[in-house]
View 1 (cartoon, rainbow, N blue to C red):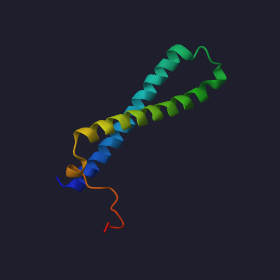
View 2: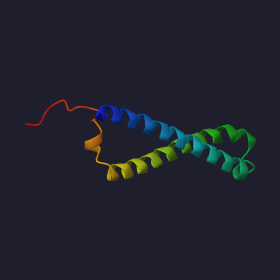
View 3: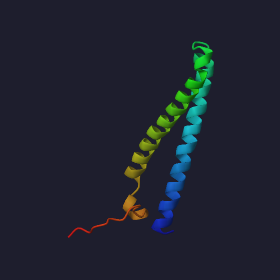
View 4: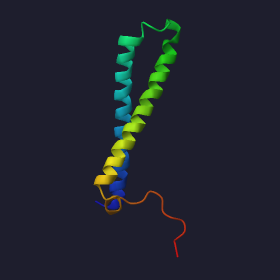
Length: 93
C-alpha cells in the first residue's frame, strides 16, 4: 500500500476509534449517573446532566485518543509509513 492509502486508512480508523470511545464512555457515564446520582439531583436538572455527560464523554475520548496516538507515534516510524497531511508551502533553502 502507498503512503497516501496508509494515511487515509489511519485517519478513518482513528476517527472510528474516537467515536467508539466516546459512545462507550457516554454509556458508562450514563449507567453510573442513573445508578448513583440520579436520585440525588432534582428532576428538572436531568436534561442538563445528560448534556454534561455528553461533554464529559467527548473529553474522555479526546484524552484517550491523545494517549493512544502518543503511544503509536513512539512505536511506529510515522515518516516511513504515512504521507504528510499538509505539504509545506515554502521549501527551506
